[in-house]
Amino acid sequence: MPQEKFRNIGLIARSESEQALYSMRQLIHFLHGRDCTVILDKAIADSLPEMGLQAAGPAQMGEACDLVIVIGGDGSLLGAARTLARFDVPVLGINRGHLGFLTDILPSEIEARVGQVLDGEYSIERRFLLDMEVRRGKAVIGEGSALNDVVLLSGDSVHMIDFELLIDGHFVYGQRSDGLIISTPTGSTAYALSGGGPIMHPRLDAMVLVPLNPHTLTSRPLVVDGNSEIKIQITTEKVKPLVSCDGTAGTRLQVDDVIAIRKKPHRLQLIHPPGHDFYQSCRSKLGWSTRPGDGN
Image 1: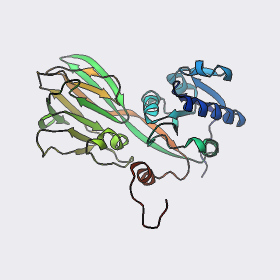
Image 2: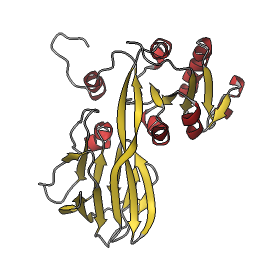
Image 3: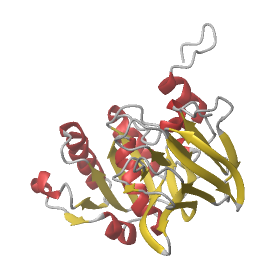
């Protein structure tokens, strides 16, 4: 059944990507042909002066637009998601990156697939994000949000780090490892997968905790309820670990610092054109085998 149709559309892309800018020009002409109002990300407005469009930051787009389209890789969409989720504005991704688990429209399909979305033919997935806070005593020294994952790493040191993990106030373990990944279902096909974690369906209300090269072989990935509160206390004194959200610049830690992670109250509305299939995406992007005689 056709759904809401979009008319005020924000466009976000990486200004240093010529391919993304090429697709952006194509998309702008197409949207103008559909009588849509287009607002351009101010970060790329200088790269497209000939378009003469209104420019705004992502937060302003969240307030003014009823749809935001991101052209780039999953990293571009992750950045937009962290800002736009609180505005409850739907986000659509066009893939100009690599795997593209979140940006699933191919450049060759822009007009056909975006046209379907504009006609009200689409599905919406609500993906939850994580809020992260770092406390040193009573002071908050770092915070961030993540659509994919919060990652604790040993930083630029080759030494393992020591920390204690608590879930909903219950002590789980003290661990010595290279770090820990706390991932949403969205992030389960990213760094957590490389670390040996499970693939989780996007509809799951769960988080997975994936140890990085733990010193004990019995330390395995742990799946917990999505409403859990995760706390990590740093107990190592030899190194200064780093905690980061979605691979962004992180916060440097010291002994007795506490990282608190919980589900963000706002969810990302991720739009898919008709026919989107999570398992088909896994087959094509992760190289899963098809059935014998099946060319798809």
